[in-house]
Image (cartoon, rainbow, N blue to C red; front, side):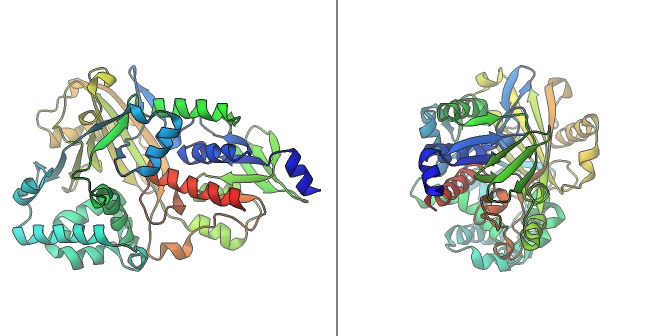
Length: 443
């Protein structure tokens, strides 16, 4: 009888979480003939890729960039019909070290980089080259990233360059992080070069992720996906006799054949009922970093680097991302768009600070880095706070990975914690969704 019912009615799926992961999964399942409902707690789709208004300029809430090597992302953009709207540029990279800005955009500038001697630079280059050629990152999960970097780059280069960068990105959690983290970061940036391209270009869709998400929502609607924004899911639980019940915070409930929960692992542990103790512990055990990210519209450019890495202590943000070195300023109302990210533990006191306190601290940091910076040129300053952004690739991470298909029939878990051999970015997220959808629809 169950087979007869399935022939008459499509399998009903619920997806909890309307970020790029949930949207891509909904797209794939709908194309495979499933009936899909997508739940998103926020009033708009997109999650970390969502956009917001900066004094009349609508752009991404967090910084994103497309690489030529982002094959999964570019394939999806083609499906959505927006691939021809990608714009490409060659950008520059800066370092703030020793109280000064340095350009590190080509080999000659690398050789001239003052904080390191020639031997240190050679070891740094060999470290990056070696990491880019590693084929199997699994053995690196057993090696602390600090130990691996000291071995390959030497103590001086580690203390001068790598340690400040690790602390900026990971805080003291760098001590728990494996060398696979660095491998994944380098592998993405060098993927295009390994395929024979002469240089890596950075790209964005004209209009930013507002354009991407608007078009994606149109495609989902055309495929029959029911999208419920502004609907927080409170409980996902199995039903006696089969099926999964999804209850919303407003008290509504519905039953589905299959449910995929794409929220961060600790949230999934709270929402999902019926999991084994081991499954729940694996979810709770995933260690995340959050982010406090400021978006600024400025009257004038800062230094012309897409990203400026910071190795000096005491600055309140992780890096400076001058997005308007990539994005046509005409799309930004003629302004300079700058992101100031700070990656922090989910329990960091910064989450309790007022916007005014964070703004004062960040602007003081810019004044320290850029003597010509003038606060009167700040046209807009907005702060995004997200407590669970990416799961730390801790030592032996693969052994403690939360399950994708759980012991509860019909309940599936999928989130950033399942990105094992990569860093959190839109391309990896789409690849994760593609792989999961294939597994879900082939069983």
